[in-house]
Image (cartoon, rainbow, N blue to C red; front, top):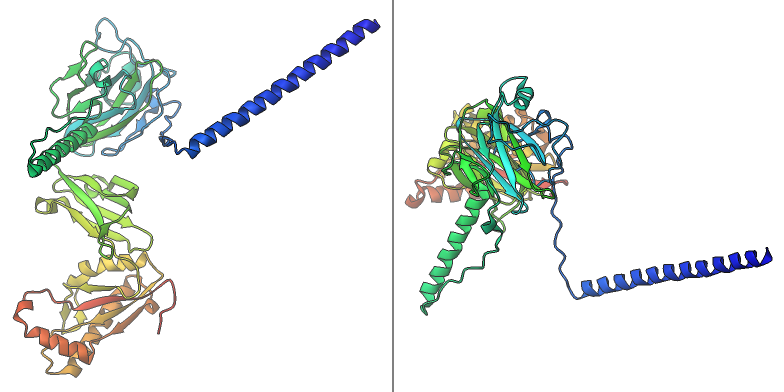
Length: 475
């Protein structure tokens, strides 16, 4: 018995020692791997930035829980669709062989059509090796999901294109041949770069698969490896559902964008800081008033880009940025028949900044007319959004210097009349001071009145001058 106990104790000690050694080895290996990783980091190895993915809701693989999409706004990139859900809605049968044999890894989307046009759908795969199928259904009634299961409601568009292996080959960068002529070679490079940008923009608009207004095929089966089907006509108020099925067993996610193609204006929109003479990033929201204030842009970090505006439609634009006055701007898209760019000025909320106002109208020389409201209201909203700003309203008159005292009195009364408008519309009275023209101002204005070169210039009758921001006004 003693021999057995001694042997058991010896085994325990041996195994304990081995375990301690194993732990120390694992610790030392962990430390060495950390050292190696630190060494790699010291060498300056670049770490690829992680892509922020939109997580697909767990029940979005069933039609009744379809994800709502906003037209003209990209959804994703998403995580990969997982499974067919609790209900197998789509399944081919003898009468309908051009449907998927069954659902694999599915996600459902739905959207409402804001205006008449042609439906474009751009699906951009994260992995081109994934085999995505796309079905588009038009919503019918409250029994819509049940009717899909029985194939009583059939898709209005089918894209079951197979994977195009040619897309999986990484294309080499094209070399532009040189001629020896420096100017000709430079122009050739610029033309090649422009063509490449246009192709990339087209690819971004079309996606890797989907529906596009310039496509030729009305339906794609598994026998085809084309990528896009032709758009269908849609009307305002109609509701459509999209089923995306990734046949690949271990696939990746995607992005999806639904657009309504019309003869619209694709306008570059930028925001310009006149002080630094550069475009700046803003928090931008644009509403489409003709479609019940549908949000067409909602971007907290808008750096500039093209926005689609429908002819005849009215829009409201709101942009803000810390340290600047916010912009509230109403406009009609028909302005872009002549304007090819929407470039809005971002004014800094800084002491001493002057805003000259034209198109301010008075009756009996100084009584403000309602025709001035459209000019003044954007500034009312500007100061409402920045209650920490105080300012002076300075009045001006056209003068030849004949009666300086009268000019001073009228200019001051004009400023007071405009102040009443601001106070009436919600600006605190103690945030506003008024002033009229000085003797020096009158002399300069009289000299300018005789200058024939300035006859056609719009007259500035009111100036808004910032006196303080976030602090008491300096004396």
